[in-house]
Image 1 (cartoon, one colour):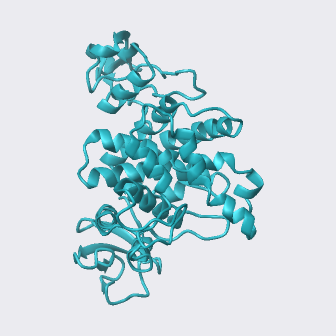
Image 2 (image 1 turned 135 degrees about the horizontal axis):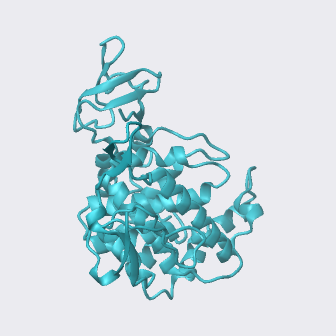
Length: 364
């Protein structure tokens, strides 16, 4: 396939990137064979990339000709390499980890770099909702913090979209969610990564990270003031049990509540040094029940709809390791649908059998 360079202002959605594109970064901000989307166009503008290598349109989808053993020419389809979400996500985490180390050394936040890391992931998540169930499995205890920042940004973005906000706010919330814990860079690693019980002084220091985060992003002109406030307030709770100020209902922004719920959901579904991960479906129930009164009901419901609103026929695994299919979902108990076991054909009503719950969605 031939390559041509096109001015970014003239690029069309659907064209294919011909080469990895770097922007003073260790890893590409856009990978070869990536299809151009509106999101990719935004990234190119952010990094001031004006000449973009793309595959010549006439050569796209054209079969390659080779000679077979008889000397005749035949056509074969050459499959294009596919960049999986997992690959893009793990590269994003590694790049975020690198800039986090820069923040530890005193470097200021370069918001264009943060945008370039997280924005290419958003379209993937929006197109494939099941990615929500993969984020916790991709995380690990060693690099949990960096996974958590990226995942919180992604979950914040799709909750924002689910609530009906326009795309500009969705993108801003992705960045705000990713930067909510940037203040952790100002906390000594021996405290931040401590495996044992924190002392009272260490616990107090950890609870100051929203203040540190706010100070790091306070003067960024590319970030809306609503997003800065959301970062500062993302550990406040409606019942006054949160921190840093112990604010209550009426004084806490909706955007901070979105980040709070995204932060809590990913933390509870991920493997931690001091706690095992929980099923996303079980976590949803815990947020609705044990955390009732702390979070905005509408925002919680948006997350419930994203996680638990699975179509009939979806294959799932139960906590007893049985595999089944969803037969019916009750709007009053969306995390506990009617299940038909594949091996035995037995019908199980999870709303009545509270000892069982869905552990994961199985893609077939």
